[in-house]
Length: 427
Ligand SMILES: O=C(O)C1=C[C@@H](OP(=O)(O)O)[C@@H](O)[C@H](O)C1
Ligand SMILES: C=C(OP(=O)(O)O)C(=O)O
Image 1 (cartoon, rainbow, N blue to C red):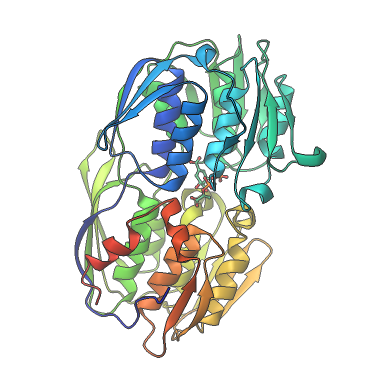
Image 2: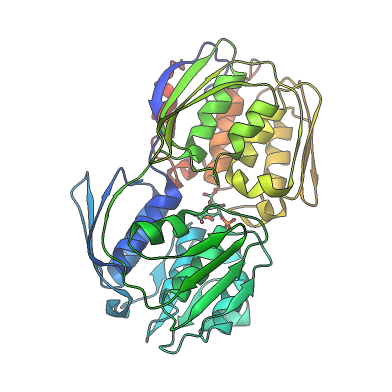
């Protein structure tokens, strides 16, 4: 696909689509709670539709009238054995969280996905679940999908120190913990997005959290709720960066979720000297409006506890750094190697093709600033975030054309991405 290049003066306001993490979880909590859950502003993107289809295959009645999704939950014990292996598509969140939910099922389930999912590591979830009494097997004795999982009615609570900072692993263990007869204690390596913890409370359950330590008791009754999904800051990130780097721009993003475990990108933009203005419009629901203007930026160092708070934004932050003065160093981000693609290599290579100077390292990237980007032939590798980042990069290309292979990958998290970009006055 030929990308839009050589843009100026982007302006206007947008409401970005629903949060992907919360959309997945709203189907999951709706399925394991008792009673009806209604979901507003659900993200109708490929990944979340995979979760919806998966829970239907487990026997949950889920209606979609095109506006509101209604989930008729009957608790963990009423999930049925699926007739066939379940397809998670491209979604790491779907497969890992579903494994936690299936930990207490009395049937065997096989979960598989696309070529990218077939390469994503599952030991991080399999090992703690096995300690709890679950039997999990990857293909040919490996940790890779297809994964066959056989749950147990005798799930044991565990005390577990997580070796990776991962909200997906944490959530899988919490879903399994909810099905034990005792108390599960988790210690995070770094604090990660806390949507699962918040939704346990929203659905009437209790969970103790203090810093990196989490305690959850099993056999709690969750009750169906009304969920209004906030806008996804990870989707907003592409327009925030467009507004900062395309000359003469002024962009407003409305109804963005501002959960502090997700707002690392705002802090990074502030530290780089970007003109970003955040107005919290609904404190209780952590929603706000974010405004950005084209800015002079400076390079910074990004690492440590900040990384999980912006993990999915690192490709677009790398692009931002190519336009700052000086060097930007991203470290402690080795998790990027096991996302939809190896995002360290993909960012360095594809932005390199467009003229950026980026060195991939073992745990991140070293990016030289103030580089003029030029045209070229690039690929998303089938990774939605790489595809969207490359379209934002193309906006500042003034010489030549940019051709993107596998542009359709954007539908994994943001099917309307190109249409929304057009609303900002892109010509
Ligand atoms: O829990 C979630 O909804 C997610 C957690 C993160 O993954 P990890 O837990 O593997 O870091 C993130 O990259 C992913 O897009 C969504
Ligand atoms: C890593 C991502 O998602 P998942 O792990 O669910 O595939 C992402 O959306 O960037």
